[in-house]
Length: 448
Image (cartoon, rainbow, N blue to C red; front, side, top):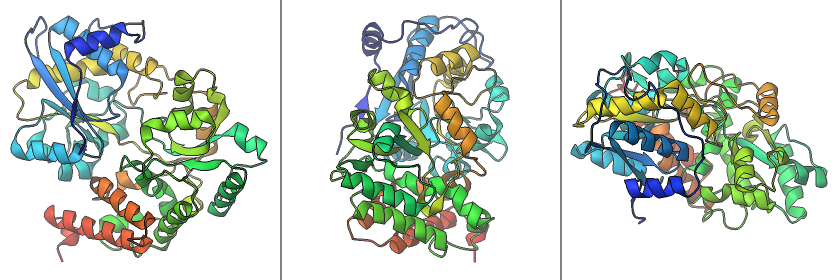
């Protein structure tokens, strides 16, 4: 089992900044000291806020802001980063034992707030915080439960949340390939790439979460074919296993694996290597975000972001963008001894000038879910957004009791890839876990 990684002591942060972080500094005037959270400004030396988050949720620019916050207030922020495949298990243990960190990270979404974190018991009500008035309404809904705001979702909910197929335009041009509009065309593209000696898709399965994206991210397509399906699922009027288009999508994903479209090492490949694999030209495509090409160019200056284009996940003939307002969010633990200081830090991060700094200095972000900021869309990103409509939100956001079982779905999919489960078995397993969670939550739709 991997060790839980703890980062960001003062010395490490200082070393990080000295080693080559952006030379631009965030403007903190009027941020921490004047945050409208009811706390007073001034030095608060000796206070440490502990903050636990999953790997990948904390950007370098946020670490720089944490240092500036400490410089201004004397409050140190100790980020504790947990491997993604262990995070929710560790978080649940800490919440259940009453030993959670002052701030804990979590995926937003009402089911997660109620089932995963029990925010009404474990988190602080943030409804009166000033920054909530500037938050995107859909994002704010995703961190709210029963009319109260419990989380701060400071994230790019479009460019960093829309997982789509990122493809190498140069490779496609060299091989005479066109952007597919159906699953059959997509499979043909993969076969043609294999015939040319190019691995079609980089799919990192070892992290436990990435390969799951292929299925719920096409929720808008499920809804397009079956209008009102998410409502029917939430009312316990139908199931995943009973829905033909879901059977098709899961079977097609299994077929891609069986055809070796993900390469020989997919089960051991890691998400952290995505940029390197795409930059090398060894792989033609990957399921990634709209900011991936910008991130690649940042790491590999010889590979232009314009090398890459985008198209939607084509399982079940999907051609819709995956609207996804839920994302990594920050919650203040109700048992914290430093609730005021934690509110002060969230208000600091949500100050307009600090949000802009986070946006400007994070290659993975093109926009943030707050008003009044200057976005940085590339022509290729804008072209995708113009070409592919986002008509409804993804199923991990709209279907109850789905997102909390994400890692379990990932394990079932691996069992499917390796022949231990069928696509139908995976869907049935999803239904069984949904039933268990709904009954535990005493959901009236499952009372009979």
